[in-house]
Length: 117
Image (tube, rainbow, N blue to C red; front, side, top):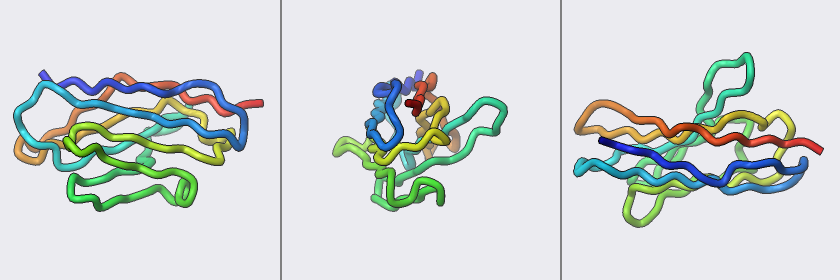
């Protein structure tokens, strides 16, 4: 059973920083892509950033230059460094892992990020 465990959410003031981390476990198959999505109240879930195990990255336009995604050496952990946070970054952030050989992805339980003064 694949499990994704997230950590690092919380409350931060505008302009501040947070780092989210996610660890995947429970499968012998290799992960192809890991990413972070977010969902604000009343809005659809959207991609924030994604990274392949080969190191290719993709960012939402709204976070380019402020957020950095990275993948761990074991290729089963992913982090999201969030700088210069804005109130509009407030959302529940979800970790996602796509297993190419299984042709499916898995989700973490979500972690709340609140940007407010």
